[in-house]
Amino acid sequence: MLKITNLQKTFNPGTVNAKVALRRFELSLADGDFVTVIGGNGAGKSTLLNAIAGVWKPDYGTIEIDGVDITSMPEHKRAAFLGRVFQDPMKGTSPDMEIAENLSIAARRGTRRRLIRGCTRKDREIYRNLLAQLELGLEDRLSTKVGLLSGGQRQAVTLLMATLKKPKILLLDEHTAALDPKTASKVLAITNKLVTENHLTTLMITHNMHDAIAYGNRLIMMHEGRIVVDVSGEEKKRLTIEQLLDLFESASGSQFADDKVMLSKKHE
Image (cartoon, one colour):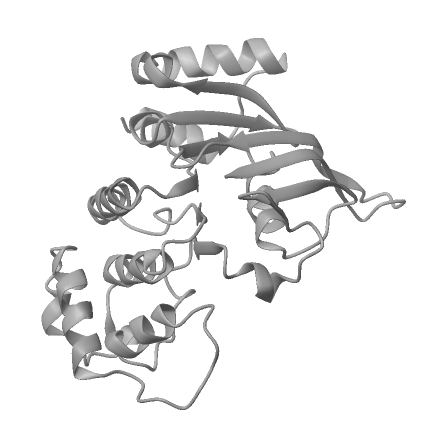
């Protein structure tokens, strides 16, 4: 479903501030893979998601989604392949529009624009049923402006919007990092439900090592723009945080150093 080959990206090339963000990066995902991505600051995690989304063009290398080479495809055109949820709950929705109106926009993503009624009675019933699955009471608040929702509620709506059209690839960029632990746990449970029930190929960046191990069928750990740890299946299920750190140190030749990630380890 996703194939990245020999991808290279350097920011500020030829200057004293030159930074190699992705280093001959290689990654292949099968249809339905749910991959968690972890790594320290500057490891290249968000750069990877931005490369897939088309925020910038790589120096060289290719990105294919479901057999289609999208490397040179403009960002707005590849939106038809992708769903994305950001760390900031304020992104991904229109705060001054109702929940139903936001979902209506998401439902029409990738379709030809024409003059039609924005949200029909039938649409509202569909959205009500979808929202009820989140178990947040939002099915009775279709007319509420999204800007009035809590961060967790807003991320749940954004998740629903991102998965409504069943994208080829779902990109989750530390989408629970700005939430309190209880709310983050709820949003992760909703994420897991939407991803597994819809069989969505997913990349989820997280700073929480426990979550990286607990969710998905595969875990990759990045360091200096490349993958240094890649575990899946039964091996991933049996991993402990200490074993994950040992794998990282053995593969990278250095100790893992990221305050935010290490803090999450201490809180488990």
